[in-house]
Length: 139
Image (cartoon, rainbow, N blue to C red):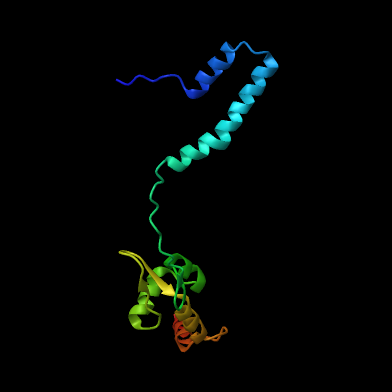
C-alpha cells in the first residue's frame, strides 16, 4: 500500500497562504511559481524521463533506383486489380515485385513506367475483340 503525499503545487499553495500576504502579493508569487515550474521544472523532468525507443521504420518508398509502389497504389496507377496483376506476372507480361518485408512486396516505379510505356496507346480493337463480337452476332 503506497501513501501519496501532497503535490508540490498544493504544498506551495499552502506555504503562500501561510505567509499572510496581500492578495496582490499572493497572486504575484503564485504566477512566479507557475512560470518557474513551466520554464525550469517541467523541461528538466521531461529531459530526465526515459524516452521510448521508436524503431526506425525503413523508408520503403526511396531506394537506390527510385521509388517503390505498394500493391494498393499499383492498382490505382495501372487500373488493374491485384489478381490480374499477378496473373500477368505469371504470364511474363508484368514486372516482378521486390520483397520489402516478411509478407509485403512493392514494385519499382521505374519498372512500372517501362511497362506503361510498352503498352499500346489508343483505342484500337484487338483481333480477340473482333472475334468476340463476331461470335456474339452469330447467336
